[in-house]
Length: 208
Image 1 (cartoon, rainbow, N blue to C red):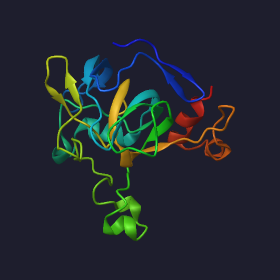
Image 2: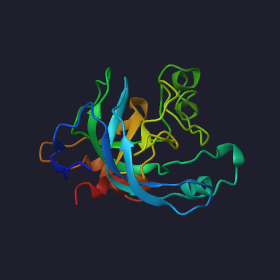
Image 3: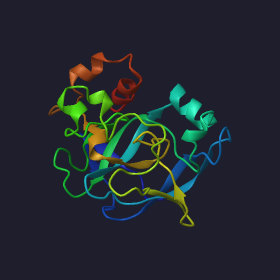
Image 4: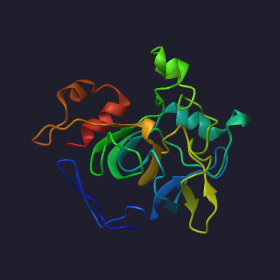
């Protein structure tokens, strides 16, 4: 596993891991309702229009629990890394990502926006055809592959465009937003107001 990461006003200080596979810990589910196994996994570099994130904080939602239980057989895909509410730092960005950079504080979002489909263009972005909520989606949109694998090379599947029960994750750039930070390293006051929302709580914890 790589060394500790230090955040200073949104800057990421670490050995250069860009373009390299990272070994880190993740909570992996190997079957419906089976206990999570915290183990070392491989997180591969982000591809075009993708972002690799160092997860700082994550929380659990009932959607994680119901999907982990696998009551809907069509949603089953194992091994899998669950989690979809978190906050972190952009560790590296893939080709074509221009709206954020390494070291930015970010929030991965399970309901992304492609900006091109009929729903995004008519302001119904929560129904995005490519990055909308889809519990059955288990791979990246760009190539149908996963960015996670076991240490012996077996694929580990994604969950809800995010997979945050891990120290590092890879998401499509459409499924991550940058958190504004002022010149003193404080979070945007607007984010502080949203303290009752689970994702916003993760954002607030960044400054603690």
